[in-house]
Image (cartoon, rainbow, N blue to C red; front, side, top):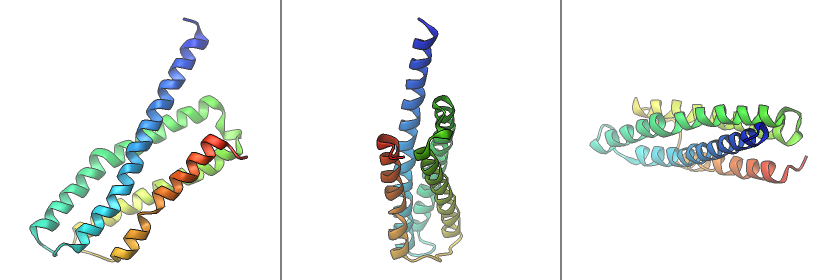
Length: 149
């Protein structure tokens, strides 16, 4: 096996891992606000609320945060490998991923507030926030596939 062949195979495995963890991360970002909506609709201090707190914590710790870290690690390796820092489409993609990371952080913090009994955001606002990862993902997919600039 030549170096070029080995490099190409490694690149494809890294790209596959990146995409797999993107799917996990975005799926979790779709689920978390929905969990919060159901949590907010449960009676404060109830057994149901305690179950939602546990579900939310597990989603964050087992799926969301590890997937986000893997997305960043594999994504940065890919960006370096293909020289993406010089590509216009990548700059916008990178900005959107930073935005999704901030959204992730906000949602984690909001879950901790919910667990303390605070409910500062309405269910309607959470339903609107639930659209953020879908819109960002659609734009990112177009940028990566079409490379419009």
